[in-house]
Image 1: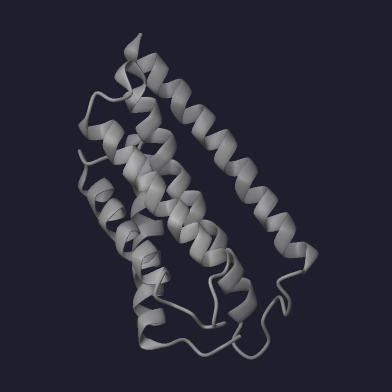
Image 2: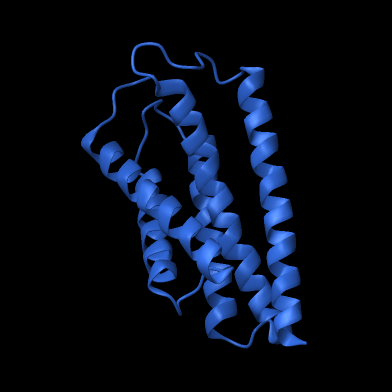
Length: 161
């Protein structure tokens, strides 16, 4: 793995802030939104993390991490539209919840990848992006997201009833 640049360290720090505040918001409030301080911190740090990801070119080309950054920015945009307009009508809260929670998945994928390929320092768990363990981690993240967002949408539905 290449050395981490100062921008990379800032990006990583903001990503950690995003993951922690997003997890806190979901655990405490069951959804991420502008109404809570943790939601505000999550959304702001997610925006900064995705924007800085687009400026990191350690491998010299647009890669999968850049694609996740674009997807994160798109999900933030859709979620914010749902939160601030009536574009989605009665589905707005569901769209917002799904979009903002999806950004958490988009954060987790590179966090797991970088973590397993960099740590422990000097003897990382994985040495290849093609390692089957990494693919199993991605599958576990996807399953956790699908279960979590399903529970979240069900909770929102019950709040309306």
